[in-house]
Image (cartoon, rainbow, N blue to C red):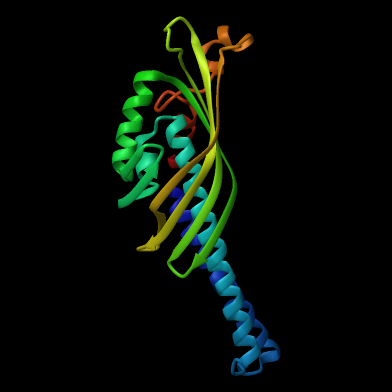
Length: 220
């Protein structure tokens, strides 16, 4: 909510800047304001269009990153906030609604996975009005028990997210996601120092991760 307000204020300020500069320049020397010429109008429109596209790209990129945080912190609110309620999802053997994918994933991770880390890279975004197509790479690490139940192991998975974004009521979210896999690897646990590290030196899940305490300071 704070981030949305900050963006709204920033957008208003940036949108007002070129208009304000034009107004000041046209009033220089106590001369009456001049009518806006065609070239000046074109420049202003170009600046406004560029600002709108930049804002859209940042909002879409933030959603991609928030999705990674959602899984790693098991932050269900963050995960569901990335998708519209009617969003469709196709990833691995799952094909259905995005919110059902999250429900199943949360249950599986809580039961079988000790921790995860998702990295999002190479986001490429094509925008057309209130719709956009985004492609990004993901690399995910899962710490889990091995099949024998004798020790932990590390499962690595790499692939791509192909997303159709839409802007509804001024907010960009995912309307359809297709997850594709390119690489996987399972290796035995090989911890050294981290194996005996105290909890306050390690990442955790919501609400125990230090991030959430820090976020509360923004509201004070």
